[in-house]
Image 1 (cartoon, one colour):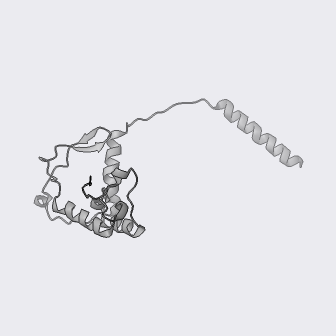
Image 2 (cartoon, rainbow, N blue to C red):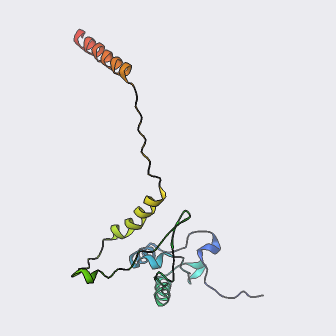
Image 3 (cartoon, rainbow, N blue to C red):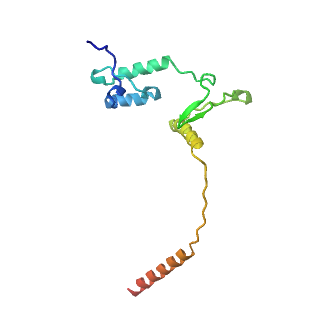
Length: 151
C-alpha cells in the first residue's frame, strides 16, 4: 500500500526541522512569518530556501484579520487576555509624524506589557535590629588593626 506524498513536518519526527545554517539565517532575516513550522520538501524533510519562500508567500496571501471585531481579546499566554489597543485618529489633533520603531522596541513592548499585567506588584519592607552585628563588625576591625600593627 502506497502512502500519499506530503511534505514532512518537524512535528512528525519529534525533532527540530533539518535546515542548513544558510537557510536558518535566511529564515531569520525574513522575519516573524517564517519562524512557524515550515514544511520541508527535500529528502528527509530538509527545509530549503524555496520552502521558506513558499511558506512566507502563503502567509502573506492570507493575512489574519487584526480588527477589534475579529479579535475581541489578544491572548498573551498564561491565561491572560488583553483587549486590543483602541484605534484613534491622532491626525485630528495636529500633524503626525510616523517613525519606525527599532526591532528591540517592537519585541520588548509586548513582553513588558505582558509582564506588567501578570506579575504582582508588591513591596515588602522589613526592619531589622543590627546593633549587635555592627558592634561585632567594629570589634573585628579593631582586632585586625592590632594584628597589623604588631607585625
